[in-house]
Image (tube, rainbow, N blue to C red; front, top):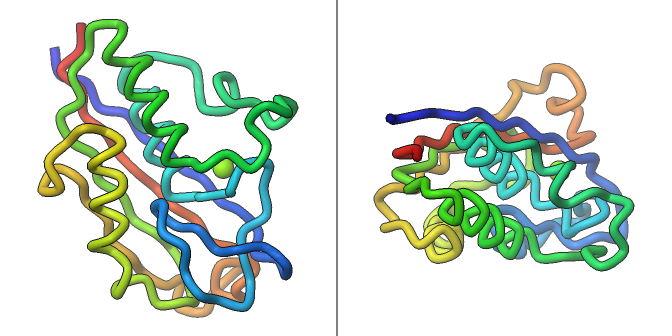
Length: 158
Ligand code: MG
């Protein structure tokens, strides 16, 4: 059967951290805070894939109490999530996602993000959707306190 899952994540923008989105390092005065590299886009996509497979969420598989994954490249999390669901007999068909970021501008980086994520998920680039929008200056995202991402994934499920 076909099954879809959704994912959502948000991380706080802080000083002294690199900004990594979709596996791409972006020049910006602030970066995202987190136990891993805090790549909010990869985390939302990982949760969407796990959700479609009926698996527990990213916090179950990659808990922030696990010192072995401190600072982990979240593209590696995507690789492992793909292995989890493929290992259980599912085929990943596509992912789609939206970043919500007041700054920096995301559009110039989307092609590079798609390539990294598609490679990790072993999907053609045309099956990886990434869009970006602002929060129209409203709320915590609009005040540039953080960056959020949402994602959906579809599996041909065992
Ligand atoms: Mg996260």
